[in-house]
Length: 465
Image (cartoon, rainbow, N blue to C red):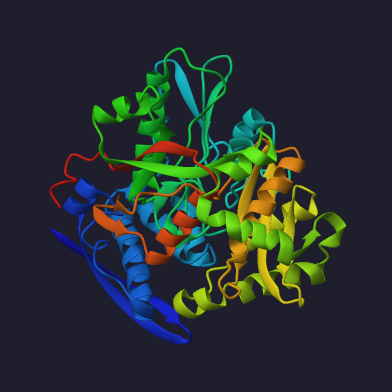
């Protein structure tokens, strides 16, 4: 039997009423995120309000029909949509949170300690009260969950649900699983650029486990519970390429998932500079040699990065990205720009600005250091006649990272294959992304590869959509 609810939303001073018809059997089978109502296409400003109204109405119907977990899922989806700024949503979540609390996820003598359900115990297990939800660095502890040196580099993002958790036995912590849910309704780690998706979840073991299958089984079961209670559509999780495939084997027993190989270009810094130069793509070498002779470099770190200088860095990046901005828009969010600059202010990295002999700015890199890893966080360049300064300024940043004591240089985040699966749809890389990946692979021959699994909810009626 269909159920109908109505809600009124304020659209910039205009009150709009939205009516939604909900089939509870559909909700029971597929969950809120994959329900018929949520699979409708919503576009534009009015579509945004229609989707928000639908979520509020689903929450009302679930509340009236004894489905607190689904009510909570709809409200959490609405909260992420509104950036945590809608008081009526926050109040309803607070009222129904205890009633909609999921069952404790424990098995095989193991226990889940969740940041959402028990933040004090979770913080105690991690030894820190600084728990980030919007920062990533490949060398930081737990990929940035604890920030850097106990410091959060950004204010917490109210639109993000931090659902990170730890696995323990009776005596000690066994693993930490940093994971969040952003506006894309996907459980992953941080997305520096949300349209590209989040970084796959990594299970961080404290020590090699005697029985990893038991831990993975509990991790996957808990993540599946989060899909239901937080209104998420899929999990994105990884394990090392050609490892024991233990995560894959655990998934294969009961999950609906896709499997892909992702990679990240990495430059080892342990050898001499001559060995690093020998590994770069042959077509880059003339550009690097040209840059050595024709470009002057300015380096900024620590106290040099005053507020005015940070603004100059931002303007330089914008200047170097002008053609991209004209074509794709400005994707430089605060979460992309601020953490690398703060790390450079902490002397954990540096900004490098390149100029031609007549003083024209033609390139910039922002590289950050943590845990022995230098990460190419931001950069851009402007071609000069038949030469590309980009090859030189990136190579220069690699050599300087070696001089600062890093053991490896990461070319930013992991990349999916040119064609991948995204929530039962194909995702095809843009020409720009393909060119960017090709550029970054030119500085060495090492690719750090991962098996990445995109996992859908384990619901009996899911395929009966």
